[in-house]
Image 1: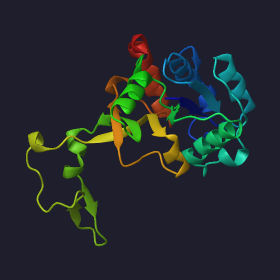
Image 2 (image 1 turned 180 degrees about the vertical axis):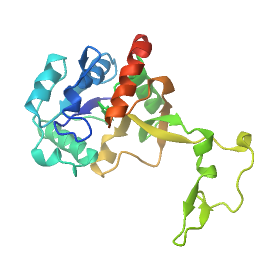
Image 3 (image 1 turned 90 degrees about the vertical axis):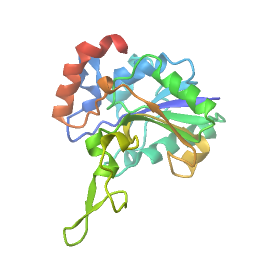
Length: 233
């Protein structure tokens, strides 16, 4: 299976200025995802998609390919990840280069255990999945069977639609949330405008490695975690 690894990194970021180039520990944030991806034995190619010349230069310095500069309209706040990935697919297919699946690695989730992406690809293939996402377990207090939605007059109902709440924690079904670290999708689905499909698989991530950097507070969490988890990367 030919899998294209894509690391999307735009220059503009509101929460943290020039976030993808900001130094975390001893290197730019984006370098963590690049170095992880380049250690993979199952990614056929690793590219960075960016509209920013400085990010492109740093990405190349750390070993990623930057085969194009992304159009500005795909680097706005309104641009979706799916359109960014479709742009990359179109670029390669126009050159006669085709991939069976796309592995999206967000640089804002910099910490991945060694071998994590290869394990995800193996599971994706073994399960004959149409897509796979990295997940973490939802803490029981936030399990959807214990959460509520409000109606238009402020009355609450169980979010899952059940009439009676599950009383015991031990009876709650496991629930998971996307942690944003990895999306793996068949190319044919990407072309249809989705990262998901009828057969969505998952890989459980390590809670200790989890951080999704969007705000200065998230950055501080990443700085605190780094000395503790660096041996796992």
